[in-house]
Amino acid sequence: NKGKYEHYMQKEIHEQPESLTTTMRGRLIRGGSCKAKTVLLGGLKDHLKTIRRSRRIVFIGCGTSYNAALAARPILEELSGIPVTMEIASDLLDRQGPIYREDTAVFVSQSGETADTLNALEYALENGALCVGITNTVGSAIARNTHCGVHINAGCEIGVASTKAYTSQIVVMAMLAIAIGADAISNQERREAIIDGLFDLPNKVREVLKLDQEMKDLAKLLIAEQSLLMFGRGYNYATALEAALKVKEVALMHSEGILAGEMKHGPLALVDENLPILVIATRDGCFSKQQSVIQQLHARKGRLVVMCSKGDAASVSVGGSSRVFEVPQVEDCLQPVVNIVPLQLLAYHLTVLRGFNVDQPRNLAKSVTTE
Ligand code: UD1
Ligand code: BG6
Image (cartoon, rainbow, N blue to C red; front, side, top):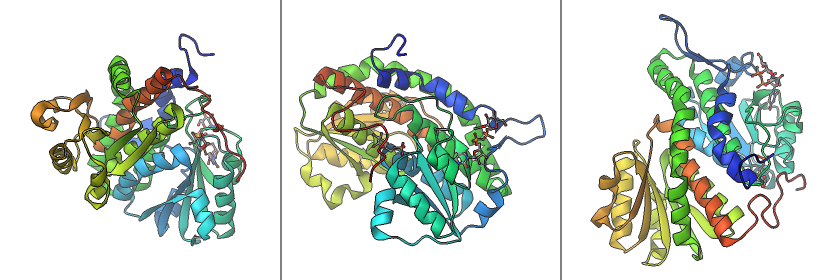
């Protein structure tokens, strides 16, 4: 049932304040006056000690689920102190990459049925790793075959392009980071700040959804382009990859997510006055580096669209030539949840304006159950 919406993707983008609330329900504990704020993940509580003892945490997934894990990687490294590595499921299998008994392997999948991810799970189980699932589908193969896990509870997702599952996956992995790091006094303040940020996150997403019309106007400007680059770094490298994936898979436009730190090592050669480039430059530890990236792109006459935090428009628009839009600022590790929303809207409007099928893009399937 699409309700008042024209497409499932549109509905699922707009219901994110609610899906995020459901994802967090019962899992965030704001204690009384002297009780600390904590996270309770029922499916993991008996396994946290084993996870804390692991030598490495390895995230495994495909497509949007992989991008969600990439968004959560920095906060998991920070709060757990454990090295976190990333694997695209098919690539791990192609290489038969090393997985050890001392590893915690985390399988991220909306459907819980993706063949590549399932095969990688079988491989990790054979190699003796602790296997943790993060999935939206109760009773799915990944939920059944992992040792333990967390259901993201985002509700049924029908649009082939994943939207609300992505933001809920990030939130679950941020909660996972807090749960794993909960035995360290040293980062208690940081954990509590993130918990406060999580409580307020649905409101911030509601606020950023108001950019709908602005994203439609931006889509109108980009409708006939051949290509669109997305520059991000740090917490928002994943946002750039995920935004590019959305534009590719539904709007059928070439788009590439680029790690801004790699700009000088190749992508800079593409910059001219024609190619549109979207730069994510919201406030975090990388902000000043991202400002200098904007300046360098501007010096090469790049056609820029910049996403920045509220009140920063003047600090990111060099010479007033770029198009800028502002998003609400949240705790740095949660910023990817807010930042992807306008870009989902952009991909949605581009698709409708270009006349393509939003909910079932050509050649793609919601759940890829063959290798
Ligand atoms: C569970 C109940 C929820 C109830 C809550 C009350 C289920 C599915 N969930 O939620 O309805 O409101 O207790 O305390 O009955 N698991 C995996 N792999 C995965 C995902 C989950 O093994 O990929 C396992 C978990 O380790 C856990 C079980 O499935 O044993 C349920 O996980 P989850 O729904 O996340 O647990 P709760 O949030 O505690
Ligand atoms: C398919 C979907 O390719 O599988 C993507 O079209 C999705 O949207 C990917 O991200 C992975 O799916 P899942 O269910 O494992 O998260």
